[in-house]
Image 1 (cartoon, rainbow, N blue to C red):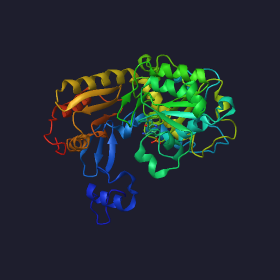
Image 2 (image 1 turned 120 degrees about the horizontal axis):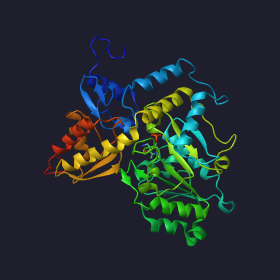
Image 3 (image 1 turned 45 degrees about the vertical axis):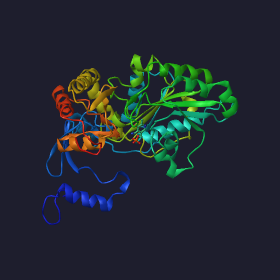
Length: 423
Ligand code: PMP
């Protein structure tokens, strides 16, 4: 019984927090609350307090918590075949790979590698860049300033944030960060002078909307420009859709919005987060005939990647999104959420940016941490993604009424006289 203390009392948030700090590595700091239960768009802490979950495990719980279809699919698969080695295939693994290729409208020759997380999907994509040898050389890999691609050493080499990188140097080499959303900076990185001086480009890795940097969409036309440059150079265009993929923005992939992708077809896409609806599963999709040359037989592997239960979770999640028309719902309820927050009239809110159900509420002051703490008190889970930005990434099943409750919270915010003050 995990909920009852040896004393016979039901463990409180305070008791759990104390145990957490003595047992769990301090990488995330003390927990904001210890949560014990979830249902739909709500979670409950150990003291019995209910919260509207506007973060969904950081863009993960696409169907909310304890969705009956997802729960049943996971249980059924676990009761049938829980795990096999990758020496064998399973129906759920194969069907998931086929489904991802279908959703991506991937051309003949495209292939999927299943992972357990976003970081592992990025690692696999990073390995692929070493297989591109323009002129027989190892090429440069370009990533954007502000980028977040994960924290293992390879993914960290692509991640831009100095505070994450510096304690762990040296990182794998050959990565160059270029200014965010700046086509001129990209032109320079691909220019003959840059190639002569720093070598050819093997790949460009981009998030269509930077998540961890504060939900920053790329300017329109950027991806199309990036596609032209990478194609001309024989380099890979790798889209990291770990956060933006699987319906989060109101399309299966963010690049599929004409205003975002301009009709581009990438060479590689990474996925995770919402893919399994809460079950840990990621994927890397390699597009077209080139896929076969990027990771061939014996060149990559993982014990758990492709696990049949994880694949069943992903298939069930995708199935519910399709059955319930959730992509269209995300576009509608997402637009409502943005509109209601903008109309809420808080003088603290400067801008609401993002797409679908991935938004940053940008504040006029660097008080996001205080606003998030106040939200928790008010029964809302949000995320201070930057000193001046609150990220909202709720379940894709968020209702219009729940969106209005969220907006109502922002309506109550007043401008503090000092940045330290709680609004
Ligand atoms: N890429 C992007 C764009 C992400 O947002 C994240 C997670 N925030 C990752 C990669 C890493 O994924 P994971 O935490 O599942 O390893």
